[in-house]
Image (cartoon, rainbow, N blue to C red):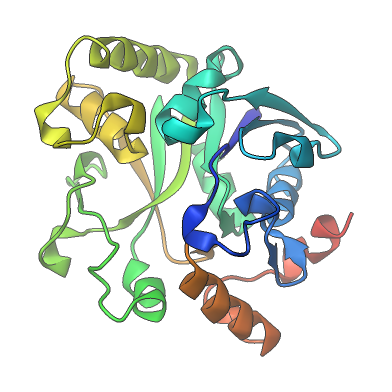
Length: 266
């Protein structure tokens, strides 16, 4: 199986740590963020790794990986970065944001999912969000599951925690059939702006916008529920809080890094 890591953006919310490097090269717990992710992928047997780059792409020539460049990185978002690697998506792939770190058990659960579109979601999201934000609804997204653990709605701004069965993590798997559904949705998008996206243009679409488009088209989007075991470093506050926790030796509150330690140092 192949993995595609979306790492094209500037990471402006993490400035000044991203002034001289891409966001995923920010040091966390004494290793760059992306090295923790590469360690998890390799522990799960994934060696074919593509990094979609943009900002300071020359700094992401990492051993054992290859690059696809999003030449429009400055004015596009995750969805367009993913489609820059469309040929690499064929035959199925793991797709991941570059600012997350996760335990291998989460990746294994995703790999084992038999569905065409599988999305890792965290049922214990409030634990991490309460640590990251004074108000856990500040940066949360709605996500509703049916009894078959299929996602029925995702990506809206919730007013209450009851609107959130789990939290989108930025980690997905698509089969070849799932990739064809993605491509069809993207092509349809270009014909008309989606009213439910508000003022946001298609080139700035969020990944949850694309997942919602699939759902509206009748494509089944299956959740792979997990309970913690990951972190996201999106802002300066995220970095400072989580790095301090790591330096105190308490990062295991959210993620077990010990099993990744040797691999991330290679």
